[in-house]
Amino acid sequence: MNYKKIFTEIENEFPKMEDPGRVPSYIPELGSIDPEKFGIHLATVTNRNYSLGDSDEKFSLQSIAKVLALTLAFKLEDENLWNRVGVEPSGTPFNSLVQLDFEKGVPRNPLINAGALVICDVLVSRLKNPRHEFLEFVRNFSGNPNIDYNMKVAESEKQTSHRNAALINLMKDYGNIKNDIGIVLDFYFNLCSLEMTCKELAHVFLFLAAHGTHPKTKIEVISGSKAKRINAIMLLCGFYDEAGEFSFKVGLPGKSGVGGGIIAVHPEQYSIAVWSPRLNKKGNSYKGMKVLEFLTDRTQSSIF
Ligand code: GLN
Image (cartoon, rainbow, N blue to C red; front, side, top):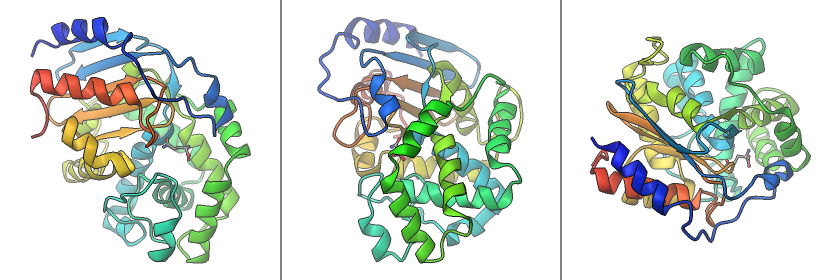
């Protein structure tokens, strides 16, 4: 596949393309990111790499990190996990409270905020020091000791976390949160504050393009069967009430974050990370979605 040619076309067209999106301000620390940042990195399972723009600059993963927490929780809990969180698309915004009450505190899926809070609760129950052990898990399987949290971002989100506090309180009332609410929320803010460059992010997610075993470190992060299921959840739930749109236009399992990042995975081929901070109305990177649509259309490489 001639990714080099496509990358040159992207470099010529996308950075200057008009972008009606907005950088989020509800987490104050994210509001100060330069909205013009634009980076991409594509890493193949056979260790070929293509980069452009600000692909070596760290950014806040935010909800992208939920996939990594899900990976560890699924590994530890097996099928029991699905007693506490579903695998259905939500059709509602990432921080919606509406459905949660109807469904008695069982979130639709692990990638909306409510679901990720349940996943964090599972990890708080299972691990002695979840903050440390989760980070070690990611560093270890990816072979990258430079991955870290950004405490300023975590602290900033904590100061404005009324909605996440509402979600977790509601679930606690329904009996679906086992630990202290403050401890689980703190772990969640740490998780979301994880930072990576596009290059690091694409490399970390390669295990989902390789049936659960990381092609670089050869570590089995998760079984092939579980990797299949996580990709399915990303495809159906990774973009909240825009998951259909992303599947329709891009055709890959993926996950977005309000830091402006998107990760997408083409099983048996590659993983690709894009960073462009301006978000559309659904909270997903405007240009990030456009550029992935362009790339999968031009290369005719999607799962469909
Ligand atoms: N930390 C963010 C929040 O809870 C994550 C949201 C996102 O990236 N969509 O609001």
